[in-house]
Image (tube, rainbow, N blue to C red):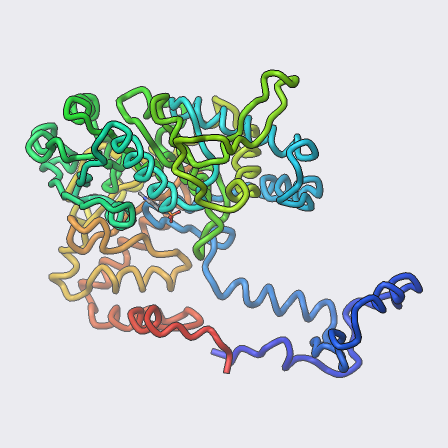
Length: 484
Ligand SMILES: *Cc1c(COP(=O)(O)O)cnc(C)c1O
């Protein structure tokens, strides 16, 4: 591999990308307003390169990483679907992008209208009575949900102590529970990979504040006992929380607010299309049933009924859990979600979910002869297979995941959920063609054959990527992002 050259190292004195006009007289005069001591003595060390070199430099860097515009990205639970560029364009319209976040409501009517309509769409999609767009990540949505649960119980006299969580839960769930001052009580999934009413009944008591469920769960299975489970939870005076990060299988099909859930967080950046590889920016909107509405984070977007139904941000919310983020969430994500929902419409959204489910089941069928399938029933938007057979032959899930990179595919989520040994969690999403799914399956099957013939080779994969096998623990603990 060639050593990466910095753009500064490509610089040659006097080389010009784009000729810039000399500053005008008035611009020059403006500059004079900046006190002398704050001005530069020497020019900024900008690289001097041609426009073409700039383009090649950054395109070259961009293709070193895997990304959704470059190839298939079946990272389970993360919904790495193709995000239409139209949504980015909407988010960068000058009227939105150049608006000051502290602009008074009267001059921000268009932006407030977008947020108001988006809340309306999310209410309809989820079946809840009220939505807040303020939280800026799925995990923050969980935290807000748990604070609302605490505020609700406290209002009734006892905040309670425990939250029930199944053993298949996403790692953020117990983390949010701790942050909100609760204790996690884990309940076991049954042999079919879902929660049984008996397990909930056995664990719940009058110190249980809520049951927190991901649906479809992290095995990609719909919690089909949900109505019965909801009855048990409510009979115990507790609330039912849904981790709705993975709503990709439910649009236009299920309204969680109508089947017993009291509170839910969306991951707008997953289901409603904002590019989110690399950790941001996120949008973790929260939906609640009527009786929890007073606790939503302030400010709440409301209408002034005495003044032409003017929209405003209402801070006068005595029962609110308070503010969790500056301004009103990641507004650019809200615009993307709005554009996405408006372009697809009700029919298109339902097709998203139908195709997400179809793609996942098709891929599962292509692979099921070649890998262990611990929960082989019809799945939702994703499924989990196990590489235990391959491990016995000498290559682990990690080795197979690394080898996939050599063929231009991003690896699935590995070793999660924890209840499946050598797990591969695969979420193809609705935006992939049949040919892509087949090419991925053929590759995975070919790698499985490689394990049989030469497992040792796989311990050294990947071979063709810009960096080979990284020490992932060291990379996380001793973050080194500076060029030397
Ligand atoms: C992605 C995800 C989360 C966390 O969302 P972030 O935006 O990354 O904080 C929580 N639960 C599930 C099931 C998820 O897939």
